[in-house]
Length: 308
Image (cartoon, rainbow, N blue to C red; front, side, top):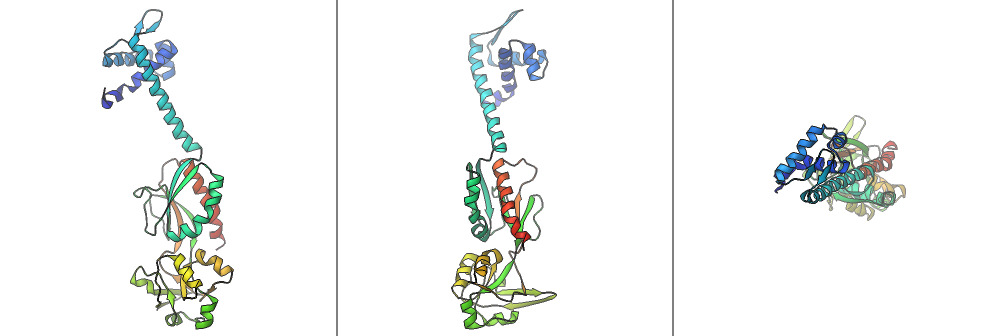
């Protein structure tokens, strides 16, 4: 029997198995929240479709035929498989286990997420992670991701958006570079320095800075353009120039004095700024593995936003 023909008979198979299990149509009907006549019709339909008698009916009892015993075995296998499928689904909803796919910009993954992995894996030994580092704006559904981090001023409509932290950029250079070339006092002075910039579009060489109501633009130059903040950070530490870096990428080097802020009273204006949002599709019950990762990232990354 092909699958399309068998599908409508699934309730009939359940009814047949429950009649045998309980010993009567009436008891099976109570179990299935149906009437005895409805259960009897389902069993009769199954017998009609199979072309065999499954139950020998008498006034006092029901007795399985030889064919009925064979069919009953298959029906019980079906019920056991259905129960196992439901248990497996509920287990994924209730217990943190399985793989979670998380996509994020490269710098966020390398500087913010990667250092947290040992703690997460220790907390949740049955959860696996598949990380995708991509600076393009991805879609959780179209790109087959459970969660993604997107940096934007306004999260896209149609998704649950949880704010993780603010993403600011800072200008900085090594103490050695600044001793050799001097510390810029105004934005326009950047044009006289080696600057390390993104280099993905021509506009990346145009830096905009704001202080209060005043906004200044300056076209910078430099021998190194790179679209990875980790490379720009290492080049800055190697005394190659003034870089515009995500604050979280430069934070440790600034704290340790290996880098110094340049024009600290001025705010850099440019792409890849705003809030880092954690996005996932709405209107669905999150599996436990996804839910614990959401809670973990909010717990570990949100305090940084609160502290500025």
